[in-house]
Length: 260
Image (cartoon, rainbow, N blue to C red; front, side, top):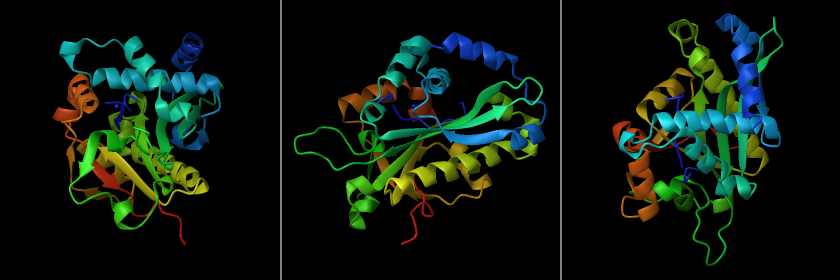
C-alpha cells in the first residue's frame, strides 16, 4: 500500500516488545534536544530497526483504515512486512534516530522510504514504482515524456513523524519541517547513488504543506485514481480515510535529480 503520513499507505505495501519498551523509556526534552541528538540513517539492513519501522508504519496505516473494515494493527503489520519492493531489494528505508542524552536510549522519530524503479521484464505484471498501481497521469508519466527509462525513476513513501515531534511546541520550533528536510535530503542521496533521476510521490494536502515549510519544491502531476483496477479499488476501500477523505495527489520533486 502507499500512503504518506505524518503519522496521520504498497500494495500495502519482533523485537517489537524490546523496542517498544525502550521507546517508552525515551523522553525528548525539547526541540533543541531533537536537533542536536538526531542522526539520519539508512536502516534497511538492520533487522531490529526495520521491525520497529514496520510497526510504526502499521500503526499509522491502521489509523487511516476504513472503520467498517475493522483492520487490526497486526493484520496491517503483516501486509507492510510482505512488501514486493523490499523483497526485491528495491526499497531503502531512512530513519531519523534520536538519542536521549540522559538515558542514552535511541528511538525512531521519523521515517521515509525510497523505492527505486527497475526495467520491466516481458510478461511481468508489476510496476517499477508503487504509485503506478494507484494513479494514472492524465498527460502520461513525465519520465516517459523526458525519455527516461524506468530504472532511473524512484518514489518516496511511508513518510511519518512520530506524535511527540508534532506537538504545538515542536511545530513552533520548526522540528517537523527540519526532520522532513533531512529525511528528504538523505533519501535523495540514496536515490542518486542508485542512478535515480526523477522522483515521484503521492501525498495528501497536510503533507504537502509540511513539504513547503521544509523549503522543498514539488510539482503536482494532474492524475486520476485507477478505480477500475480491482486491487487498487480494494486498497482505496480498505484505507478510505486516506484515499478518499485525505484526497492525496501525485507529485514530482524537480530538485531531486542529480546534476548532469
